[in-house]
Length: 161
Image 1 (tube, rainbow, N blue to C red):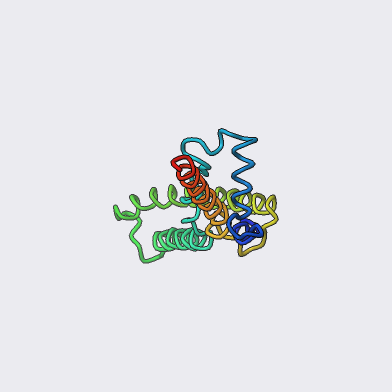
Image 2 (image 1 turned 45 degrees about the vertical axis):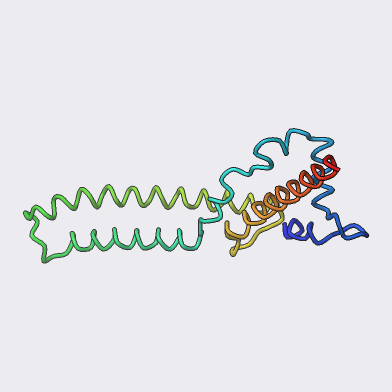
């Protein structure tokens, strides 16, 4: 994946065109629709970069801890079982506990799917985070768009001359 970042560094002998320009040439000649209109769009990649697995996991642990605290408070011996607080929050606590369990299962599924995705691109490990993984794609798409715009501008100048 880190090779995507190096595509701009690989240049022709004259130093004017990069490997990105060659990729654009291939896209224009062999896959003409890819660069039309919106260009190379990677939907939701920038949004995915904002997600932090470690922060999400921490937030989920904190939520589970808070639900356990409510459960402990409700089961404490000093609480009055006839108190309206106990009856109202017992219902809430049961629903919250079930929701937290469902979130934990969903989080594990997402985590496993993200790890599998990383492995498909030879990126894996416990430290794999969306910001770095999706960042490769976002930077690549921006580089393609920027180089494509440069090529279009150069062509317009040539046509005017």
